[in-house]
Amino acid sequence: MNPNEKFRPRPTPETQEYWDGARRGELRIQRCNACQRPYFYPRSSCPQCGGVDIEWMTATGRATLHSYGISMRPTPGFEAPYVIAIVELEEGPRMLSAIRGVAPQPENLELDMPLTVCFEDRGDYSIPAFSPTETIR
Picture: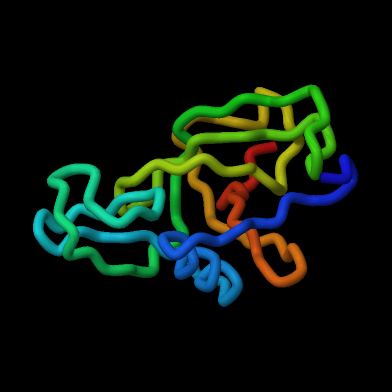
């Protein structure tokens, strides 16, 4: 990968609906019909009960900041510094994501701060990221 080239996903059969949803501006996650628990990352069986009767659902796109790190080193497709975070979706699952719309400094990143999904265009795909719902500073 060219160091200046932005990441582009490589969908698998298990993740295709996730990436198709992102292209439509929807954050898609899965829910088990046996135990009714939503989960993320996409997979063919429920991580809680092992059920295989699963469905896709559209998440609200609302989340809170659970944890984060600020990378000071560039990575292919990411200019440093940048924030990589674990966000907790309103539906319960946690996911790894980038934080946008806020300077990558600790004083701008409060744990439990409300976030909203946003999507970054990457040609044929869109990548979900999150930004603060309210301005902190």
